[in-house]
Image (cartoon, rainbow, N blue to C red; front, side, top):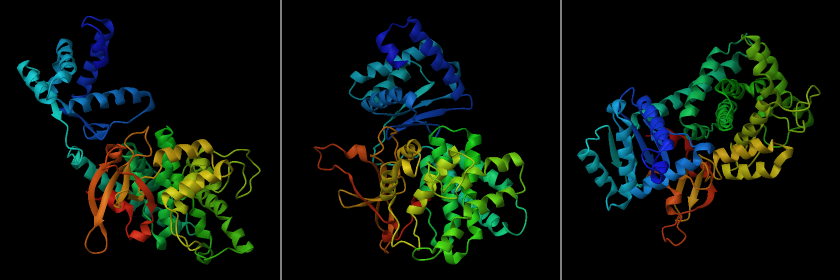
Length: 459
């Protein structure tokens, strides 16, 4: 609408159509009361919710980011009186926005003009200092963090409960499906939070935390590639139960330091089949069981069907199997295991997986996974060029996956790390600036003595 108004008079049909579309959306978004469209760190938030950054809207969003940044606008409040605003009043507002570029203080000038013109349905919000946290949707975000924490805890409890009952009685999956629905909802609201939550590692409870983390990462990847919510629910359940068969493998083998013997390998490679047998025994509709069998069966198979277990009934992996293959390996590489001296950092894990290439992973899905988590994956501890330690929190610009928002960390005085300021690295990437900041390298969480998830869940 703004772009069209720059080029045409008010009576132009294209402009009038744009105004009508805007008016319809305005009525919709203010039906329940006042609504705020806020702009921060190159992203838009409507009513506290992050507006999805999609390929088809990228050009429009980028143009609006540039336009609002030039004006120093941090947001626009649309009041419920927008329900009755006339098209000509909307056009007046658009013309004021365009003309404000010429003013020394666009926000002050705009609000004065709106007040003088009786435009009480809209208000301009000045851009906040980028170094400050903005308090929009604070209660909503706090509630989301609490839900994420509870969902993870319940998922862990469910996987443990199912595993403990696996060889004793018929087990149901109703609780797992409800959890899967919660996971899908939370990922739709804040994918970065859920990827961050998947950094929880528990050496003593590894099999269970691994299963929950694979479920979170798999569902995030499924969401990233555009799968339906129904498919995502099944995928999430597959992640929770993909290693169920390890209940049938002795702990001596699972926790053995060093290489397995041939006979031990035979037992280890049986766990996907054991898991399938347990799923078939579940107290669940046949249609559900049929949908959650393939992923757990295939998660150790390569695209060329090498790996295990050996299969002759298919010539290609299912989509669920391909996704679980990627997330299972990534999660395992970044976890402490008895058979290796140290885990890979997330960045190292991605490089190894990329070098292993098409033999081990579906190349398109692997590329999508790397695009989703970022060059230095969300949840990575990194060293910055000024020597400070930071945690990668998000990649707000979907087209720039090497420049994240990071949380600076500092010594808390007792040997640990405490939260510092959040900064967006592109704001510091002027090559001529002495304050330029870059990521130098990834750091081991175990060396720092902290878990990334704690910082995602803190206020």
